[in-house]
Length: 112
Image 1 (cartoon, helix red, strand yellow):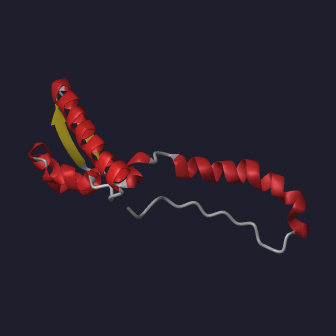
Image 2 (spheres, helix red, strand yellow; image 1 turned 180 degrees about the horizontal axis):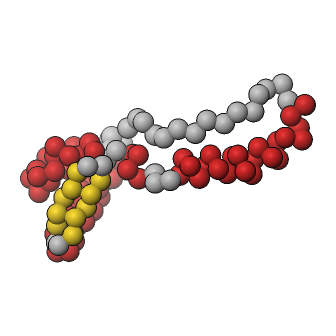
């Protein structure tokens, strides 16, 4: 057994369950992709997952599991460090020639 923990939610599953879950998501994903590619429809993968009885135990946690912030790790901090340590020093010699203030703000993804 192992647990998948994301933002305060946890879902316990065995490796067999993990393989079955992966297989179900692949099939649903391919079905949704076919609608997009062959019919020009919208990607309805999330709706397919919500309608599949297999995923009923986690429907209440689905929003937390799919929160984009769950997947970005330390990217905001890495970008801020890169801008501060690499980009800003390169722009500094040209500061007097710029009509704009150079200021960087890095925020996390908040929308869906």
